[in-house]
Image (cartoon, rainbow, N blue to C red; front, top):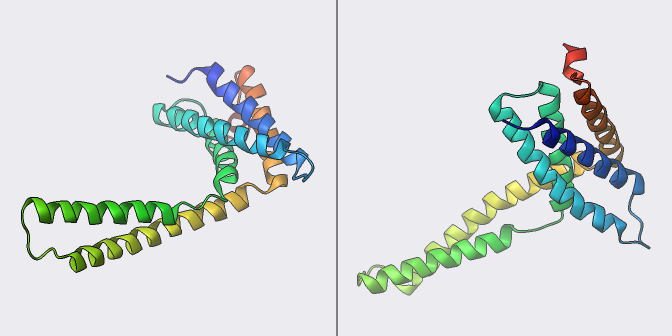
Length: 178
């Protein structure tokens, strides 16, 4: 069971961080945007977790769960949209595959696993993993760009605060829509 206090706290904190981040904007003379970005990352992860828990438990109205997950994604993706990890992950996986094949060839004396074969297989794995993670990275960048749009974040923050206030009164936005 997801406690009502956690859901309300997630909505209030997420709403305030979204509003502050959207209102403050990007100012070069201050580091508040980076602080809000970091807070958004942490709060966004927490909101997504709370929303998924509420959804899997079948608790709360659709609007509450949707706002938790949508605003959480907005805060989370805005923070990570500039991080490029596809090449690093591909290099690690390719290196691990190469090392694993090298270890297998030495441990079991597999003659067909020459150095050239190991390098080719590791490179092919590296390329495949890079393409997959680059696609995922591009999707996250696009989601972060769309959901991190400041006016949209401001509105989503206000909606989250309204939903939290309605939950205190034992209502939700879904009650008024349905």
